[in-house]
Image (tube, rainbow, N blue to C red; front, side, top):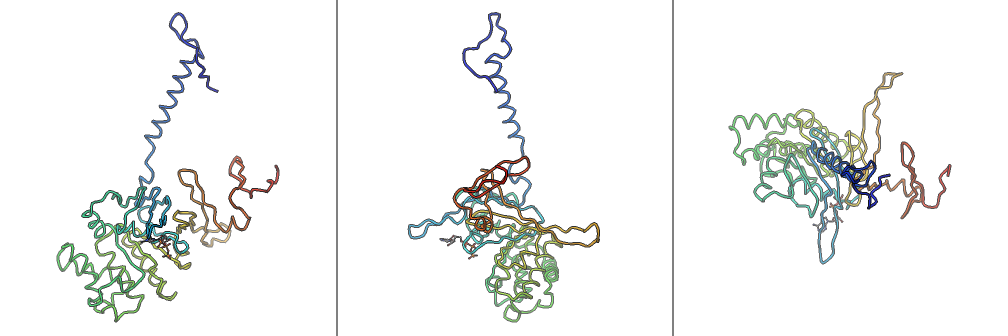
Length: 341
Ligand SMILES: Nc1ncnc2c1ncn2[C@@H]1O[C@H](COP(=O)(O)OP(=O)(O)OP(=O)(O)O)[C@@H](O)[C@H]1O
């Protein structure tokens, strides 16, 4: 233990006797400086992520009542990921998507997408951000497309508005995008001449028109039957694989959530658990199988959200008992005596 008691000063000859208070204080100071330097050199949170949300808060006030839709949400998404966000109704998914889409601003915290600081953008930068950095697909099919334009005209519009490229290049890109999402045959049809699934796939092409870094979709298959939903999801997957676009999908659809490698659950305005899926080859049979593992998010304040089904199943409430083991932490209901206590 470091002795920092007062009264121990340099000796008569000016030299510090070993173990003196001054020497100990200097050692403590060196240690503090070393730790501060370590902290300085450590990469910042989310430095290599395309999307980073750091303790994001969004409070709505309505009729004098405050609703905390996001309560310190942390989320990192790497470039090229295809991931799903799930959560109960009212957990804050749409609030998060609106912030990432540049349609709403957080009350506190930090949010960055492709290097843009979502809290510090001017209204002009915000407009550019919405046009160039993110593409958006909404649940309601009619919200995504202009009804009096054909599929090709809808997809051509964002680039036309931006005044980018020559007409021929734009037309080629429209054809290529409709091909990627699998609706090249709908090129000259207006929305009412297409099925709901075809309209959503055209909507994906529209959202991709300006080469966005991120494609955001809020319940894009919510109005579709499961077979059609699969086709729409396949279009997201192709956009991700062929164009490298990072895709974040909010979904209630378990089938869609199971199809992605990473599913993040939001609970009470915070990220709570995360499921990562990997393909593993069985050494004995050589057969491939998808292995899913569930993780809980540990935020930088050390907070951990335990899944409700775990805590409810074990009758855990208000307070739990913890014990640190060499390689894990044990958690027991408050009134339980741990096995080898
Ligand atoms: N504009 C607003 N004004 C007041 N409260 C709001 C507003 N928008 C959202 N909320 C509230 O914030 C909370 C989170 O809402 P949000 O729409 O983000 O949830 P959600 O997870 O997307 O739900 P759902 O799955 O039903 O769409 C809810 O309690 C909601 O009532």
